[in-house]
Structure formats: C-alpha cells, structure tokens
Length: 393
Ligand SMILES: Nc1nc2c(c(=O)[nH]1)N[C@H]1C(S)=C(S)[C@@H](COP(=O)(O)OP(=O)(O)OC[C@H]3O[C@@H](n4cnc5c(N)ncnc54)[C@H](O)[C@@H]3O)O[C@H]1N2
Ligand code: MOO
Image (cartoon, rainbow, N blue to C red; front, side, top):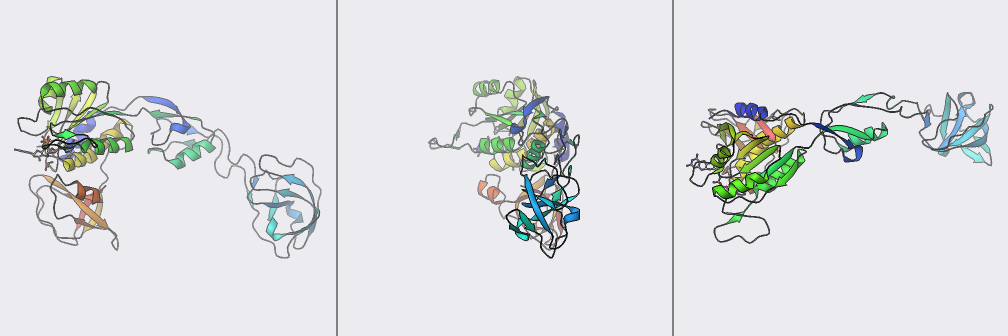
C-alpha cells in the first residue's frame, strides 16, 4: 500500500493542463484564467464628484462665501461652460468636475436662494473629488490565480474587458457500480439502496469547475460495466465508485484493465479509502473510488479535487491546517485515518473533536462534520490539548 502523499503525486501525474478557450466575461464565474487581462481604460477616466452638491474653485472655498450657480454637471453629462471667480456649478455624484483643483461642497451643508449659494461658516476639509485613475490606470494587468469570483468579474467589467482566456472546463464522467443501487426518487427493491455517491461526486466536481456527465449505474457484471465505460468516451476524468475491493463482484479493476487501464496504483494506506485505484484509460485519467459513501467522499476530497485543480492550472496541494485536539484519541494502525470531526472556535487555533463512530457508511456524521482530522499512520494515542492537523470540509 502506498501513502496518501505518494498517491497524490501519482494522481497528479495522470492529468495534464487543459487547453484554453475564449469566453465572454459574463460566463467567467468559477473559471480559471489562463492569461492576464489589461485594463482598457483608466478608472475613473476623469476626476469625478463623490457627492451631490456644488463644485467651486478652491479660491472661492471660504467660510460664509456667497456664489452664483452657473450650470449643472451630472453623471454622463458634464459642465462645459467657462467659470469666473465667485461662480459655482450644481454637481451630482459621478459627474466630471468642471476644472482641476476645485472642491465639492455637500448640498446639505449650504443654503441656496435662487441662484445664490451661501457656504457654511465651518468648512469641511474634504474635497469630495475622486481623482482620475484612483482605482486603476489603463494597462494595469489583472491575473487572479483562483477560480473567478463575482468581485473579479466586477473589476474586469470596470476595466472594459469583455472576453477572457480561461482553461477549458474538465469533463468528468461519473459511474456508480452495483446491483444494489437505484437513483433517488426510484423505489428500491427489497435488497437495494439509493445511489448517493454520484450526487456527492457531481457536486464536488462542479464546485471545482468541472462539467459533469452522470452516466447510468453499471450493474455488477462485465458487460454492463463495459457498456457504461464506453459512454465515458471523451471525458478528461472517469470517476467510478464501488466495485473496487476484493470480492467476486468487485469488477471495476478487471474491466478497466481489459479496456486498457494503465494502472498507477491500487490500495493506499488510508482510512477510509483503502481500495482506491487510479490510472490512465486512453485519453482520460481514471479514479476508482471505493463504494462506501464516506470512503468515496473522502477520496474525492483528497484526490479528485486536486486533480481538477491541476487540470485547470491551480495549485493542487491539500489544504492542511492546525487545530487543538478536543478529545483524547487512540493510536492509529497501518493507515492514515481521516476522521470526521467538528471544529469549534478556540482561543488561538480552533478546537477539533472527532465523532465517536467513524464507520465509513455513515453519511449523517459526514454531513455534520466540519473537517477531517488527520491521524497519521503509526501514530500513538493523542491527548486533549495537543496540536493536530486537519483538512476543512
Ligand atoms: N475482504 C475484504 N473486504 C473489504 C475490504 C478488504 O480489504 N477486504 N475493504 C473494505 C473497504 S476498506 C472498503 S472501502 C470497501 C470498498 O468496497 P468496494 O469499493 O468494492 O465497494 P462496494 O462493495 O461496491 O460497496 C461498498 C458499500 O458501499 C455501498 N455503495 C456502493 N456504491 C454506492 C453508491 N453509489 N451510493 C451509495 N452507496 C454505495 C454499497 O452498497 C456497499 O454497502 O470494501 C470493504 N471490504
Ligand atoms: O477504507 Mo474503507 O474505505 O474503510 O471503508
């Protein structure tokens, strides 16, 4: 059995960076940029008023001064007349200022009688003018190294960037295997259960930027498995769950090998997830997850997510953090144990407490968990208060 670290290195060797494509900005959410953009303009493109009020020259900005309102500057429609000393312009938020070096006085702070404006006795120091280029200058590059967020899209829209070069979405084919499985909404037979793994795997994949093809459930026979594998043609990543272990009905490894799987490994020193397999099948990477729902989920978190990140040019390391153990835990065996655990705020580091039962069929505890507490293989018992590692869920 290889270690989790070796297995991660091997699955990352199975994937290659995807080609790039150009998409409209509107479709950019969650995508990963493959090339920088540059601001097509300076923002703001002109010095602009930050408030609704009156613009006046700095020399006229004297306590109690009276001025004549000569015209108006609104957002989208500036004032282009000439101004003499003692003259002011009605101005609104976002409007270009009439000239360099003036001041905007808030409308609440002045009194106005017809066209005559009187400034207050106590003047504010605030000019209320946003200088040209305060946000960014034309040509400023932008190249975030994460999946694009709403804020990234807002910034690039303001930069007048209409198209982005991004990595293509990885296509993930998801295959559940097992005679016992039916889809949610169907009526299971007496010996059947509902296929839940596909929903976890599809959601994790989509959240990581993938396009998912959820294939029909494969029965526990070679012909059915072959047929469903054939439907995965064209995917970048084929993810199976179930049929990975050693029983007579565990046929995924055999059928995949018959179809050309070049296996990188089978079985890792990890709990849950021991029967994990991976390799290359034609043009796709293949990840064969164990059927137990928790094993499938934990393996997807530890291996599928990093593979999807690597396909899109993002860092693929596990997000390992530290916490203080909230309960004594026993020694581990020959496999690194990823224990479902709860996090609670602590004085410095958070406190982490594993759930009492860690059976790899318990989805309720998995849904409640905040983190996977990492208990390294061969580690002794650990006491409350010791510092330990975890992966947030
Ligand atoms: N003699 C041994 N038996 C087992 C070993 C072993 O080393 N020696 N390993 C155990 C471990 S660890 C795991 S994990 C499981 C993995 O087995 P498989 O990958 O072959 O999974 P199945 O047997 O097909 O299913 C296991 C379990 O999970 C349920 N399942 C399967 N698919 C789904 C799905 N899509 N949605 C929900 N539930 C699913 C299935 O009904 C079984 O209950 O093997 C141990 N055995
Ligand atoms: O390693 Mo298995 O995944 O414990 O249930």
